[in-house]
Length: 310
Image 1 (spheres, helix red, strand yellow):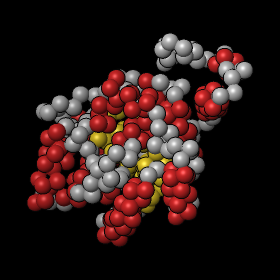
Image 2 (cartoon, rainbow, N blue to C red):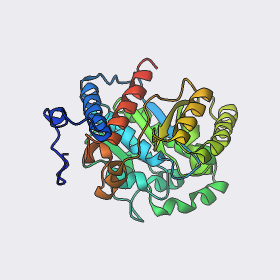
Image 3 (cartoon, rainbow, N blue to C red):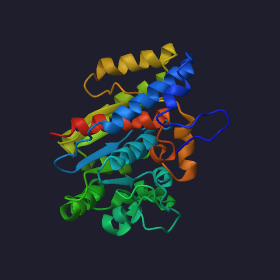
Image 4 (cartoon, helix red, strand yellow):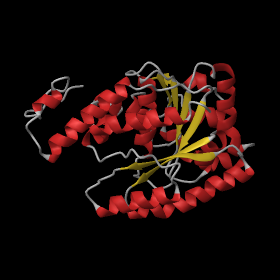
């Protein structure tokens, strides 16, 4: 989508030419973003040989978890993959961003986990991307952690549903992305039991590092007792501002501890990313030329390339 604000040039082949004589930091950043987008549009996004189930988790709120879930999923769908997003957060923000209904009473992940409905019964296609689907979350999910306490196989409710879905539709879908609530309760535990991969978004601020140790410890416990296949495959640095020492220091520390998992591509602070859900869209469709959209497209490609031989 073009930005029609006064003073902002239309994007396209002439984009770089508009700023050819402008050596300001803004102009350089915009030209670099457009060039990166063109490179990504020409790049290959390999499809995995089997369905990849990726849980996006971080018990700290406000780190870009849902934003990362929906935008990575949308970027993969835009480049040829068929993707299912499972919204496991009672706030339903992933459902909002994908543009699917999630008012109370809407068939949702609640009915799947608590009432035994199938995923195929409740999933809804994204209006903007026909190869992107969503299992919505409603406010009904808010009490699920308590309701699950006395349920048989309480940690495996989502795993059973996803495995049944993949047994019937696995040949059609390339990715299942599960967006977790900002907690380490039974909903997040269910999402970890079913996934082989965990993607952790980390905000480039000091406090974001404090919860990382606890999250890693939880994943290791799940690996030991419930799901031997789970591992941290990807760490994404979000809300990155390279002008600040703090952001650079946090990035260096995370990369020092997780050199193989932490992506070089970072997600910058972006108004376009923040405003996209208010239009019922991801930034991938809301403004594909924005710095945030290009960053998530690059992250999606790196995830696709890493899993091509899995």
